[in-house]
Length: 185
Image 1: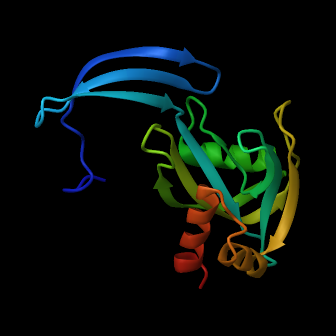
Image 2: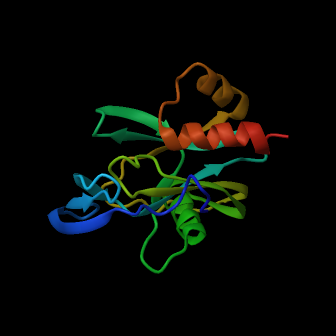
């Protein structure tokens, strides 16, 4: 989506080098030239790719969520199932795969809610948020390093948790705000 406020930059890329390449992220160091000021700008970019977050809504008025330890903040958090889109997948295919892998539920219906960039100051990561309905219980297929508990929380309780600031992860907050503004009719 391009408009007068959301369009490509006109900075000239002067040089770029890979500072770190891991299994999940790449860190690049870049120098740009601002054509309006002639100033040289140094940036570090974390290339993290594209992920999907899925809001699974049951017919009983609950959200299926996961409890998972998150080592960067040293806490176990509740979140919606999520994961990276793999090469060759589109975001919907990745969302459906992650939902089943992490929760053991397959969605009969899936709807894209929105795309967000959680950390545009230093990362290109794009997250697509989906709403999944008509859920059918199958089997989980966790990655060997995943430590995930599946929980169901009534939507009314989740709304209270959101209102009380008990949900602090950006994708969950954005997804829930969208849900309560536009989907919860």
